[in-house]
Image (tube, rainbow, N blue to C red):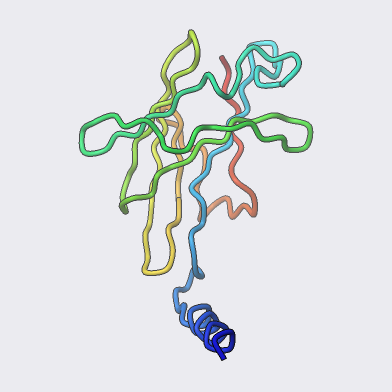
Length: 150
């Protein structure tokens, strides 16, 4: 009887979503492919010069820099390595993040976030002022991959 009640509650929760964009949380992720001027992959585990663990991500929250709770990690896509960074998605609007590269500079990422009753969606990403992903225009099934030259 207990299992039946649990099953009914789970079904009700799953069927109660009415948002146009679906239920749940669409991850606010940006994948960065980092290369040098010659096009060499700086994140490649065997030949690269940047390790994902040496990259720091900070969020600007109410005027204060807060270290990201989610550390960037290495992803591989079609033979290319990328650094995956996450927005925090706490509020609708524009979120600002700073990426500190080891021994290099600091880059700025802006994320436009829309929060609904059942979803959190990253609709746009800007990297150092350049729009690199627009959810309406790009309509990607995967996370956006942006090439960064260091």
